[in-house]
Length: 188
Image (cartoon, rainbow, N blue to C red; front, side, top):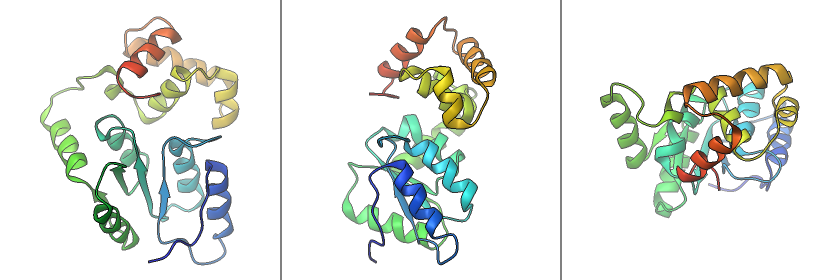
């Protein structure tokens, strides 16, 4: 096993994956959620559009209970918390490189618990992938115009998603979203 390339931002990662389009793909792309310029969630979406078969493993400091299921739905092949043991990272990379998904014990428990529950217990768990993505961006202080440009949507579409999020989560404004996201460890 060797490191073929390194990137410190989402855009660099996308550029490196794009350069591989004419050749052999990377065995695994290891992504963090918190990166400068473009977060791991958005980077994952772009990678999935460019190369759907690319193995992507998320290694992040964010809690599995808050992000893992949404990222797996968005196309990640696995999710690990940075607090895991180094040998687990190696196992996960090897599993994803073979074309499998990797679920840590914590992620498997989170997934199993979500199957046991009749409905979402946290308001953000009932959001669709796109609603959750826009919720996190709004809660982080981004404005709809910037979000629209970044996600290649119209401002009206972003505003519609915002209205749905506010309604589903029984909130009235962006400050409510920010407070909730910080309180639940969804943003820093």
